[in-house]
Length: 170
Image 1 (cartoon, helix red, strand yellow):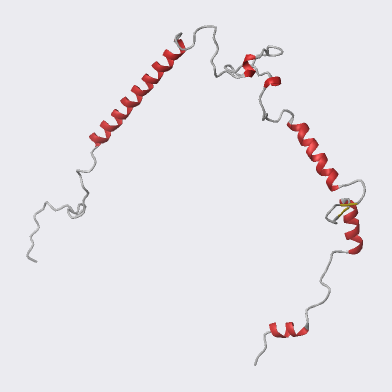
Image 2 (image 1 turned 120 degrees about the vertical axis):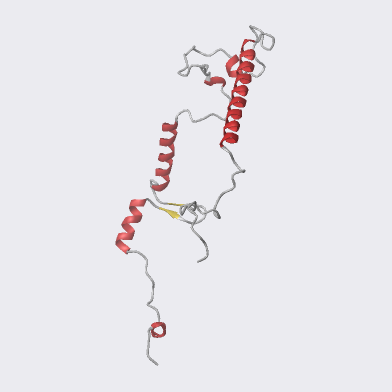
């Protein structure tokens, strides 16, 4: 060997395997995050000032006048003044609430739906609909299946099919 040990070779560090040190620096990342925080704080401050100005502005909404966007339900006097559960929501007068409305009695409507389905499944007497299908109560249909059994294939497959599928030696 003609290389001589000089003593400054570190076996844990390979000079040929390294990374690019000019791409990212901790200082650049820190300055970006500080700039992002300052910009976010500035935007929050501007929005707070704008909403504070609009809430206190008499020029846009003078006292005693209503907004033109107010709906008819708020203009009409409610039948009785009920306090809303939520803090910033007024009570709603359902007599002038516009269509389509949400379900007002969902439990009652579900009972009506289940009753109509039950009537369809268990008609009081058998009937034939316009397409020719005969509708009978489920209990009667179950008794008929019990007496007659489920439908089966009328015939067994022909014997030549069984011979073709069996594994035979030539």
